[in-house]
Image: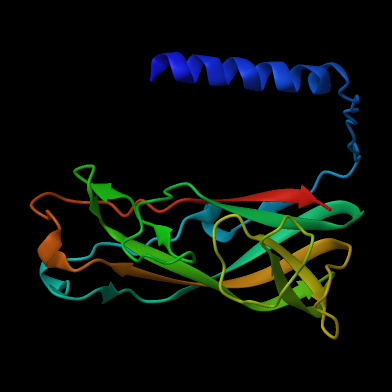
Length: 208
């Protein structure tokens, strides 16, 4: 079998050689834009959403424990008008107890037990103080939708109130986010020691 394989390989190489020698060339083009605009994203309370102390005995044993919803505003302020979006990154990806693309992780207990998850969805949005609507893109701005449930890698931007098909250029963008967190069923968690919720999401400004 080895001899037959070697002979077959030689025939293939000989047959391909003329085509390799006659291959056409291709060019690599490097593009990009350096913008003088530097926009700054901010969240209230330094970006910390604190649920305080939660007693282990108050958690549901056989179902998720839903925590009190939180509301916060994501703001992006620029020195001049710019076409932009904020991209989300789940820094605890793979730790969410809910198997869904919109579930963000809350970290692990003992390196294996998924503590819970949280979700975020958009509410009101403003573009330079005027009412708008939040829009998202999963293909880096090639297309947009009004899906209000956020997920990691989403681009998040503001569109005009009467046209969701594309973002508008803004100097100041504000989007209200509603966050709901849940602790996984307690009968699968080691709660013999104090455990901290460890969710982390980065919002990074992208210029379109």
